[in-house]
Image (cartoon, rainbow over all chains, first blue to last red; front, top):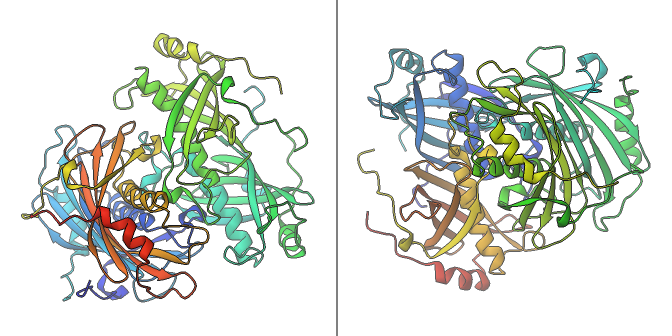
Length: 150
Length: 150
Length: 150
Length: 150
């Protein structure tokens, strides 16, 4: 825990997705439960992909499977706070993408939590890794950011 | 099922709370799962109460316990749709409130789903029903609507 | 609220599905949130259908869409309680089924909550109501119970 | 991604908590959504603590706040699978605990997913880190395992 990275600012993220919290997000300690933060990650990335036109959850031939995720929690978020989820791409592989996500409470500039998740793209029928489509690479290009020095 | 009430319009609700959908709200049929609609009900009513200053979830002496809920589903909502949750009060009892909620997909005028839930207010320490506080009655007055003729 | 039906006993239900509660089911009042009860309903009915071999969520041509649900809450359930979800069929229509569900906390004999939900079965491709399949009717026959007099 | 640790077996975990999956855990790809795995982590650890008598979520003066979590996903779990969540303690600090969790599908011996989370224990009133209580240290002692060589 000695090398715990510091919370980042909004400026290190490329796009933001607005998310509203829900009554049942709060757990018994009256803060958004740690699990729910991952649904914000999932939502931010997939919403960006759907709105970019490169993810069709019903008929697309390529889908992203999540192979690893992590999150660090700096300060609490609680319903009815709003959340701005900042996203960036830290690494683009042949068939995988490392997304990094920061969660900002209401209008705050410093992240309440941040983490990452890695998508491996597979052919939907065979379930085998497949090279990222041209459309997906184009959609992700504006999200590319060098990882901040930690 | 022959007397199923028709979907209502936005005009029959008194206030609206904006809610964003999440990736994991979609179930295997690619629509928001029926369970999640109730979290929209809960969120809409409690957010109104918190923002009205009459519900303090940490220190309030009176809390609302849910004793019954129902929902009718007319047409699907799916992530990444936005939801406007319309609320009204159909009945104010001594210690209970019947809320009615309509869920509107994106900018649609006709409800995708509507339902109700009944809160019984209790004293937090004793867990016994308690008359609605003056502050709560004042907050709920602008939500009062006669139930539409069905 | 004057004609609120009484909580039923296990004897009025035909089959039981065992469900474990989760930390995040508890809301800020330290009880399972009212929304989560509906996920127990959904789970109980669909698990019975899958285990009976008459629901294939990936390739089945007929799926059940939920058109209405309701729940009455009698006494709290809280993590880490276990839940036994009792199910019965109260009405079998041409293309619809009315399920009734009772939720029993740990080894209790009296329901903590009970409710219903109505499935309309549709052809997956056309989304049009379709007569219940022979396999489904056979699976549901052992669940048929007359509704208790209320 | 080249140094991805292999999935572990049940033998590397100290205690197991049985968890049932739910219909709505499955996402649009018909597998348990990646977010839900963290609710299994949370449930396994907190259930062990509650049953050990060292966590009282209503009145305890010390609570565990989650400061970081991670998960690696090896193979899918899907409703209606059962999950056995294996837990162990990899590190006990002055006021923090690093838990490691493996999720085993049905009767499988190889983990479908594994991860960790770090609790920092704080005094409930002041929200300041507090040394782990004697009761908690005693409850955690049987969970201690050296981390497997990776």
